[in-house]
Image (tube, rainbow, N blue to C red):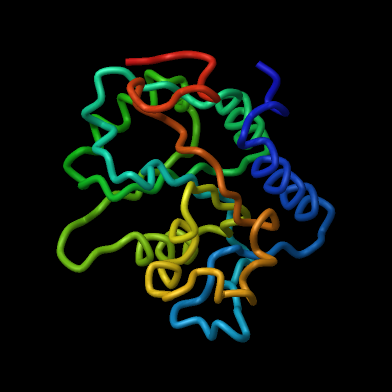
Amino acid sequence: VDPDSSPYASFAAYALTQSAKLAEGEGVRSVVLVPRVDIFKPETMACEGKPLAVVIDLDDTTGRDWIEAETLYRQNGLIEVLLSLRAAEISVIWLSDQPLAASGKISAILNEAGFSQSESDDFLFLDRGGDDRKQVRRWDAARNYCIVAMAGDDRADFDELYGYLRNPDGALTLEPMFNNGWFITPPPLVEANENTANQPDDKEG
């Protein structure tokens, strides 16, 4: 599969460009907004001295419990995209609202899909219970890693403020982030009974 044909191609290309800039001694910036961000003067979290990583959201906007699906399709070219990121020493952080107790099952699903490698520096950020939420886990990730690109199928996958805006298009100051660190992509894994017209090369599990 040609990774350039993947819906994740632009996301990977952006992350790889940041890695190349860092290798040349240039500065790179995080794409995670600071806590309590001023929407009119958006700032991103500090990056200096942190290893590079990307965040990929595993959930889809329908809220379906995808880990219970009998058959999941994987997105075209994503395996190759992940290989290219890891070759550039960019860690992959998988984000989901699935509970921490499901980590073993999700790890097995990612492995079966070919998204994991035994030597790869991957992390699962799952719901730890209590007041935990995705936004807190994004900030936690960004405190330890320089998050150079994020992929998700919904604007709220980049910052939770999109869940509170009466009109999501009102966040015009954040629009430049899209395709410039934030990438709208289909979910990495999609249930076989959903519309799979532009889906996978392959099925798993």
